[in-house]
Amino acid sequence: MRWHCRRGTRELDRLLERWLDEHAAVANEARILQFEAVLACEDRELQRWILGYQVCERAELTALIDEIRANPIV
Image (cartoon, rainbow, N blue to C red):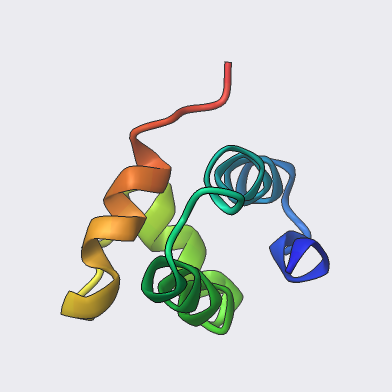
C-alpha cells in the first residue's frame, strides 16, 4: 500500500503516507478497503478532493477523505 501512496506530489504523498502510518495498523478491514479504494482513484481527482478544491461525490469515500484532510502536514 505504501507504494500506492506515492502520487508524484509531495503534499499528497505525505498526507496519504501519514494516514497509512497512523491508522493502518489499527484500522479494521472495511477501513483498509476504503483506503485502497481511495488509492485506486485517479491522481488529479484525488488531489482535488484531499487538498479541498473539490468535494468528493463518492459517498463511500467522503469520511475517509475528510479524515485525511483533517490531519494537515506541519
